[in-house]
Image 1: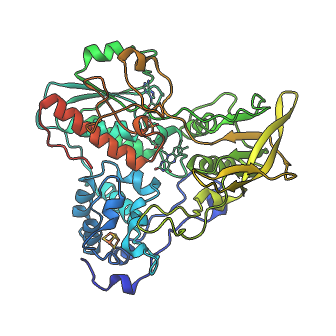
Image 2: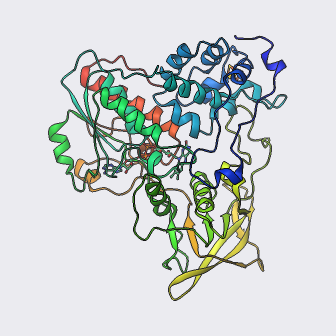
Image 3: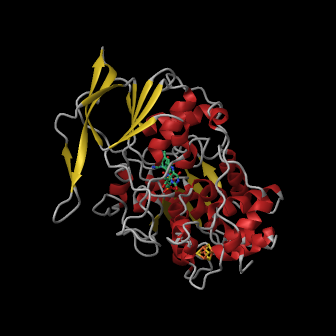
Length: 480
Ligand SMILES: Cc1cc2nc3c(=O)[nH]c(=O)nc-3n(C[C@H](O)[C@H](O)[C@H](O)COP(=O)(O)OP(=O)(O)OC[C@H]3O[C@@H](n4cnc5c(N)ncnc54)[C@H](O)[C@@H]3O)c2cc1C
Ligand code: SF4
């Protein structure tokens, strides 16, 4: 333990962010780097608990108290070694993770309510490691002669590929999009994570022997049979990108789009591409339906594009400011959280449902909605009821549907390989992440359903361990 009295001497430091007026003018990350001296104080708050609940709260099993202590002692290079031991890409999670570890931190208990700033310490360790040149490629000492195909280049596929390459397998990552990164690249906007972080990791992975093939849509323009013939194992990590639709009257009107039609175009423009007929918010009344990460990313993007107004509609009631009695520490706290994008303008209306879209000449002009209440039931979840007489109309020139995802997209390769799906139409896997087809593994959202980056990396590491064990009969790889 760094400083036994640290947690009594300092309060939790808030994130430092760029002013809203400034950040709305560009697409750069809005969270500012932390001063290392201040971080030392924050790391000293860690109590090195006998039972570190933070560690249990982290899907990757990050050994958080160790690196808090090393930061306190100014041993940053050892801190990154400890962090990399469990997490391939701390610069992704340090920027994007909702930090279940902080929800579980003992200093987050009701009496303190000031968990250690674990995420901020994490991102500072890795940013400093890159800046100091401590992050090096780790090519294998010898090759095994085995070849592995990874299908999909999101965080699950990337983590899996890196782990497998480092133990000597020849890994090829196939990606149907024109750039590598999955939702890190084309879902999450630049202002949450600049894409240079992915490019830098790709270079490291190439130096470790990973080959990337873009515009390769497996099961479509590249037959799965080719992969079966040419590789010893296959890892499916194609995500869960089947968007939930809103089949109400007027859905077909021009101007009503899935969020994931809108966000990738904006991200492409940030990469320097020209997008014909880009779906754009400039001068428009924008309605975002759905209040999760995807919805917040739409709000931030629309505000930066110069929307006339941005209104976010959420069918659920506003979450409480504090944990409810049935949601105690160290569980994930189901409380109200203000995303960075929510600070930048626009209104969020809770407890409303969309009845229909109204248009003129085939183009959306208005949204008609109604207030809803959630009535408790003796058994099962609360039931949604419309409040009579509460119908309303709001102007709508661009409607973005961000209501979650229903699992992996249908792909003929599932049938060709005879892959079994579970009841939620995700790909079924055993404890080693192998599907029912020997030699075909799965990782990330494709087997969990739409989830988090931290889970995708954890899954990628588990699948890599499973593949290595299956190919070699033993493995030195570690996984959560
Ligand atoms: C807009 C948005 C914002 C989000 N924000 C956050 C956040 O802030 N924090 C967080 O923790 N999580 C966030 N998430 C969730 C997170 O991005 C995902 O859980 C995570 O990316 C899943 O990783 P994955 O590798 O399983 O799949 P993905 O990232 O979805 O990557 C799958 C890749 O596989 C490719 N692919 C699919 N089929 C094929 C095929 N047949 N052949 C070749 N390639 C294929 C896809 O093109 C894609 O690139 C967000 C999700 C969205 C949609
Ligand atoms: S639970 Fe919090 S205080 Fe305890 S070891 Fe983890 S980070 Fe430190």
